[in-house]
Image (cartoon, rainbow, N blue to C red; front, side, top):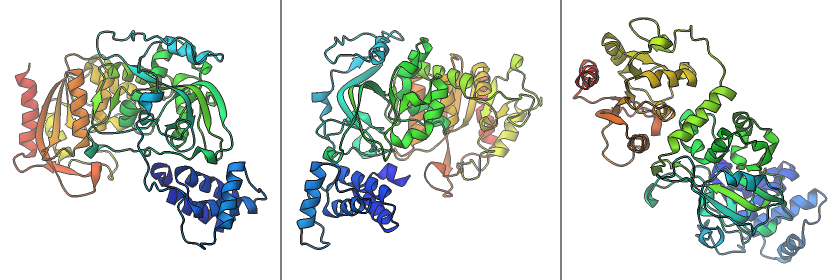
Length: 483
């Protein structure tokens, strides 16, 4: 799994050598080929030559035979001789030359993908999106003759990467990161052949395991599929390509949009690369710590509607473990207007607010209902938030669920950490969300790290300025002042 994220030539070379030692020659061949695709080196070619020889294969192509012959003639022992001078992956800004002008999304694109006889010179006129033609149209890119391998991203025939084909987070170079892998210039000569496709759409990120990333990054990249599905179009008629590292989520994507999972392709370690004549790459409707398109909330609502219908199981709402309040009940016909989203029942390894249980007890006295979102369905959460007037809580992914409702009267009260530096990713993401949706938000800077656990899972506590009673009273006073 770490290799899928690092995609380092030396790591793959080491894996190849390990497989070679265990006499797992097929796995060794795949590892060495991936290492060579990322960076040519004598030792990788030597390992590939040995693995091929042990497997009874003399050579896969004239190119490979030539390289192996060169390696055999070397008399430098085990001294590393690099066949290229580039020591690091390159970022090539080549898409401006190869990708057509950025297009504005339209439903006609579905029919172009559906048409197996699509001609590359067919007229591709821009059309305005029908969702919101006056504000922030949704965009996509068109790549001609894009190559998809088991290495993350899309490359052109020269092996140069397309910059918009991988998942990124952040705005400035200082805070930019690449969670699934970096850009790589590939040595495509290592591949003997390709599987040809006339057309396809590239979905660069899938994640059904984390609701926050599903609602943000995944929805941002599958938006054409969601809009086409909402339109009633049969998505079995198009080719969908996902990264090898996201292939475990293919079944859930198939369930979501009601298609056969065989129509969702990925290039595995042993598969030949794909050569796609016309490859659609959606421009994300949001990038974490960067921006959010005003249309993203509509995309999320479509996603959650399909998720509830096609994936989520129904729930017995007679259970009482997902909420706590004075009444001891939570009826759909009379939902509470003051909701506090709690993290106190999350697993201990997740981020916790030390005093949260005590704060919940105080808020219940003021008539609040405490919700434990992980204990109930998405469908029930949406109904609760849709009918609420106030939603409060500490920073967390649960607040992204507000993207899935239309509630113009909703006011958000967020308990947040004091921001000394721009390092609070969650704070930035929620700020972008609330600003884009023009939500009424009251941020109370009242938390600090405890030093327990690390990263986004660091526990927090109230700063000395606040006690359990004073912060609870402050939250309640906001609701009184705004009535």
